[in-house]
Image (cartoon, rainbow, N blue to C red):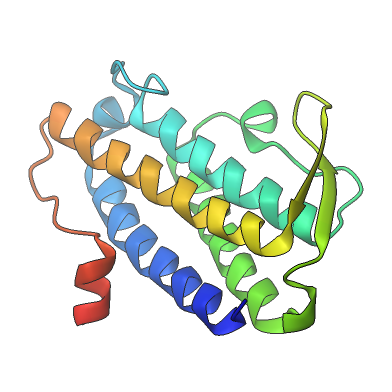
Length: 163
């Protein structure tokens, strides 16, 4: 497994998140919290889920004794949510930059939020985290259109690679 691949994907994640964060800063408070039928009931809740997911995976990778699940700790306040999300994304790049490539095949043991024990290869964790973020960024794009925000653009990896 090649560490440079995951580092490139981590940089793509930051790039795409930056675009989405710009959109989220432009919408009104009403649009941020408007109820929408989706995996989560608002843009704010979806953004908090993304921030929480990137953060808890980073905590698990760093072997934090009690990883934080942000949606249980805070409300989807825009500035705080986007700040936590940015810090988690940057932390993932830092972690991958400093990881020993020989550990990518090693097993990470952790507990899910519900307490169930799980084991995954470290490179599987990286793949999951970035795929998960891409999935929910796509939902945010759709949700933004539903609340009337029209300035969305592409965050596809193809666009990133072409820049």
